[in-house]
Length: 120
Ligand code: AMP
Ligand code: ZN
Image (cartoon, rainbow, N blue to C red):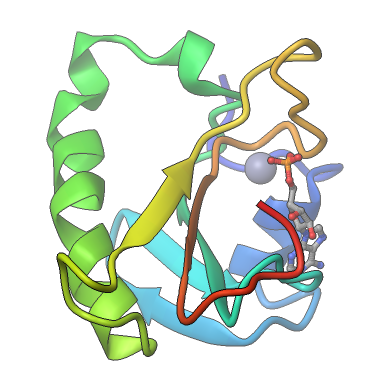
């Protein structure tokens, strides 16, 4: 699988070819605000390498995937989610057609903030 897919909207966001509101970036991970938020806080965390979905992960991905999970609660607080347990956040990773995945570049939704939310 190639590192970047020239037809992928999230690869274009990582490359700066499509504008985004960046939340975080390191060598392997990129986070940016969702363009159609469901909640007061709604951002996406993605691997910089083009990986189509969670179904494509192998044991070689355990490192950055673990880092992504540990990074998420830190970014959630930084972006305005309230602390656990009264606050918290929701993480969703839609996978495949029946999982309602629309963009075919693996992404974790992180949603939080005071209720009510627009959706979810
Ligand atoms: P899904 O594939 O259904 O898990 O969701 C894809 C998400 O990507 C949706 O919540 C969209 O609002 C979001 N999205 C699509 N295009 C952009 C973009 N250019 N910038 C930020 N978020 C986007
Ligand atoms: Zn991509």
